[in-house]
Length: 178
Ligand SMILES: C[S@@+](CC[C@H](N)C(=O)[O-])C[C@H]1O[C@@H](n2cnc3c(N)ncnc32)[C@H](O)[C@@H]1O
Image (cartoon, rainbow, N blue to C red; front, side):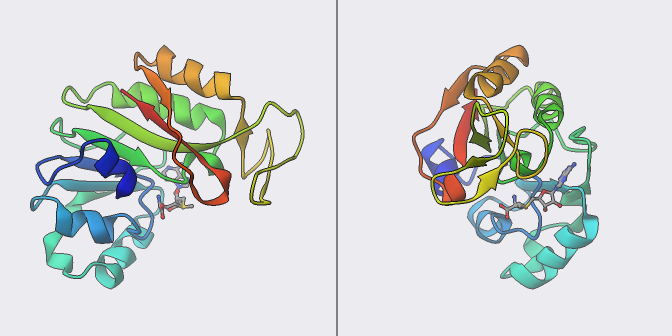
């Protein structure tokens, strides 16, 4: 919520929470946003539905069809109204091609102001100990990527890349694609 607020989120925004899991963000974003303005995608529909029933203060605030099963970042059925997107702790678990696909597919949202996402960074060809101790890898989860590779992926999709100074758990780095 702090990252989205810093990106200018208001209740009027239409937010896409990519890899939203059990609604760790959604349980705060759904009550904050205007009704119907939150959409979530995840590889696991069951996880999202469980989160809707157990984590939301009022599950009726989030229509079930706003939680969309999507493991390829194709965003099926997500409306053009989306203005902000976030993927927190998602690309840290997936090969770089997932980030590239997501960024490319986000370009179809005409009103999108910013997409926020996290990565682990390292240039190392082998295991890297991140600032708080988690060990990341270039070829298996949790993944790290060189900073230049993230910036290149953002720019290749037609966005402007900004690495934000925000400190996040486990040494994840927050990026903004605008
Ligand atoms: C560490 S959790 C983060 C969940 C949520 N963003 C949060 O901050 O709590 C990673 C999430 O990514 C989802 N995920 C993994 N592979 C995915 C894929 N290919 N497409 C979409 N979601 C995926 C998992 O199901 C899981 O919910």
